[in-house]
Length: 559
Image 1: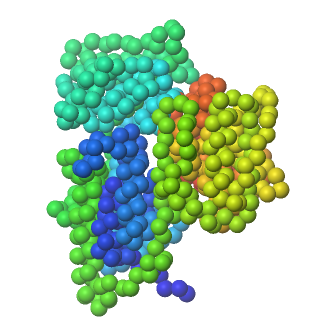
Image 2: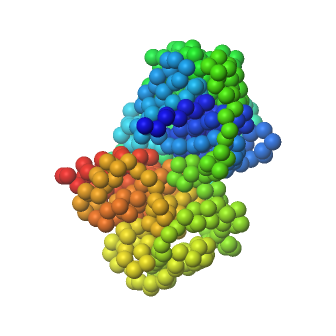
Image 3: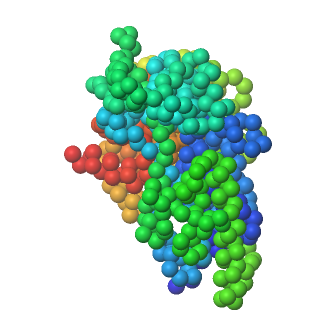
């Protein structure tokens, strides 16, 4: 029986706190593992533009997190994806119980972050995904030309209200206090924007409608006066974006760790918790300011304290403090686990000009393409439109990046039920594989295309054998995934569904750009992405794991 691997430190969460901890722990030559159950980068990936990170004038949230991740990996930190279900903090060796496996370590850094808090107004749950949203970068473009309300008075509300004016006809910020609670310069982004109005001392009481939002009820908390917004007769709906703070992600360890009355973890000046050898960093910690820079500082302090703790433990147990590290075994970037490709996205639907893949992106892609073992065909279904020409330029340039990728063009006439232009993946014998892209898979969706080729023509992503067997037993299943190219969560859902199609010829998975094909959005009343539709059934909104998607397919096909 193989001896279990004991890490020096395991970091739970790969947001700015977890990645910064990984940078400092890796640089200190600690054997470091970072575990993330969702999106590497955390909530920052939902931030349109970061304006206040030191020495960086402005930067896309995902781009900043990609840089942090690359730095952590360069210092030797390993990143994996798993859902942590339980902890055992007793003894010198801690155990972190994941859904895939157990992880053993000498110290733990909890950087689990916090999730957007629901406001609790009437209709919030009913209209989530159909007008009520929490991420402007994911869903903002779906509200192009509409009235949008932003609820909140802090940093996020002010910044995202300003960002949403790129799409919305007009933005109204609803602030329950008498003024913004963020820094004046941040508040000015909303206050000085001519497309933004701000209503102070106001609260959202309820929203209502049929398939879409059609009215919203507000209350002046000073006078008690109620007002109602009705969507104009010439408009179909409007949007409500909620930015009212966060709630800590402390599931699984609150019984072992002291927390404050709001559920945030209590720590000392060195980020140590009440449990020996367990540290905490970032938004999950009780503190007055939750920003990227404070999360990064927490991560650095936590990793440094963990290093001292581990060193003292090893000295006490007569274990070598710095074992030899085989750098060849250190993963640079783990496909489908660690990163989004560092791509540029177009925020508005404009005709692309110039090259699609710069030299840096080509280098990233080559690290994946070098693992391809068989040929594949990118079949371009051309309807003669300008968007089809754009898709053709993208696909041709993409195919030139590796000899295993071949481009073919097929002129087709539009027919009922078929979305054009589209890109379909075939094997070397021109057999369809059930994987298609209705739209141009650029921006974050480039990840989906790359992962599809990796699963079709390369070694493929490893999944649990029992889950694989469940996928192979699925009957005829058609999966459609409505996406926005600016959404950071969509590629995981698209890639998971397409992986199912690779494993089972009964399954098809189609990525659909809702900006290019708004009729699906109208038919299914979609106002949030990712939006997954199985066999033309009800829409499943939000990020979904592969296991959740398989379970949903089993449920639908069993009916």
